[in-house]
Structures are given as structure tokens and as C-alpha cells.
Length: 261
Image (cartoon, rainbow, N blue to C red; front, side):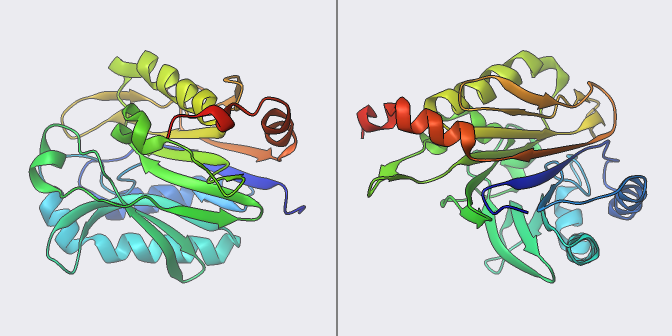
């Protein structure tokens, strides 16, 4: 594949609360149901356990089997894999950690900066550093759910005659009750940062009974929806992006040169 392009597979799935083994088995079944050819395979936030008050036990006991699945999947399909899960770090703190896996190792990670009210804020610690990963010719900033509400944390930058990132990848457990905000926030971040924005969301009910309808989608730097998964349905969204629109927009409408610093 042309290195200017990137082939994405975005997994919109239900997540059974507190049951990593069942979720992993279910993902394996979903992936077997179709041909997976991608550069990047992305799962929702807390992909193997969802949110519940049991987040501490899950972080302590079930992290390794989730990592093993991501390693195994990356090798099997020849793709990078991205997901988040609760992790006990060396400082003994728990983080909602996004991991970027390539073959049998983690090449990058990001600890969620903005923790949501409830169990996450109660049990997890906030990260402090953003992470940008290069895949093919794409620089990708990976963030998690609630982060999308904070424009300064999402902000692209124009440094040394180049923009820091081309695409903002957000994995989420964004509830159906705030689906309008989901679309509005993703669209705003795309336009103001002159970048693609990818939002990968779950469906089904979490451990607190909150419903999620997915609405996994990709928005281009003009704020237009490129593609969107069916609402309230398990689905693997496959799409190829290239730099054509991005380069054209940035060359002919260089808003970034006038950004406030």
C-alpha cells in the first residue's frame, strides 16, 4: 500500500462488564467473521472489561490476557492494534492506559489525562503526557473519551513549518445520552486542528446500566463525515484514508499560521 495512505479497521462492539475472557473470545469471533486487511485495528476504550466498580480487581488480575490478545491479533493480521484497559503501573497507581501494539510489543502508550466522574476518577490516576505515533506517512495523536471535551489538550501545533499531527484518534465509551455532543465535539476538533478525527465507540450497556449506541465515525478536516458505522450495531468499519484532502486544505487555507500560541 502507498505509504501516503492508511487502511483502518474500527471495531464497534458490545463490552461485557468485568469479563475479560468473554470479551476477548467475542472479539476473536467478530474478527473471524470478516477479512481483516489493515494497517491499524482499533478497539474501544476499556475494550476488555468496560466500566464498573470492579476496575481495581480487573487491573490487578486481567491485564496480561488483554495484552496477550492484542499481541496475538497484531501478529495474526499483520496490523498495529490500539485499545485501552486499566493497568497497574510500576508506581502502583492505576491508569486508563491506551496501548499501541505492533507485533509482540507495545511501541507507545498514553495514560488518559481527563478522568470522568465516578469510578474512573475515584480509582485511576491522570496521565500527564500526550503521545503521537507515526504509521505510514501519518502522525496520529491518540486520546481517550472525555479528553475530547478539552480543546487545549487536543490542540494541534505548527512547529518548524509543520503540523504535529494529521489525525486525532479517540477511543471511547461515550453514552447514548450524549450522542449529540459526541458528533459536535469530534467535528469541532477536526475543523479547528485541520486534521482528520476518528472516533471509535462501543455499543451496549456498561456496568452502571448506561446505554451506548456506537456512532463510530471519521470526520475530515472540513468537518464532513467520511464514513459512519450503523447505530446500535456491532460493526467493523473499514476505510482507507490518504493525504490528498489534508494536503490541499493545509496548502490553500493555512489557518494554522494564525493560531494563537
